[in-house]
Image (cartoon, rainbow, N blue to C red):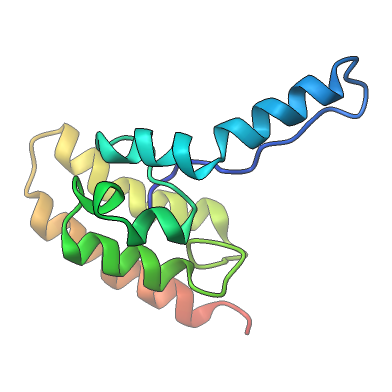
Length: 125
């Protein structure tokens, strides 16, 4: 459980303005900037300190915050690693397609969850 927001910022090796780019990265990922975006309910931060602050937590439910913290704690990734990425995306996408088509989303999500858990269990350890 996590947002799909990417916090993987980079500076191109061939950049002619690396210093300016680095200043932007520092600004964009700073506590002050990320607390502003997270406090209005957009772009969840990758910073633990923002999640711990009342402003950072205000627009997210306690359950969501707990799940986000648990899924990111001590890991360099925020979702299960799978070899069969295409199959995983198809399984997860089936619930999204059901919603778009006006089908029973709860049933589709339950089915997708069962299929995804089976896929995770079949993955090499």
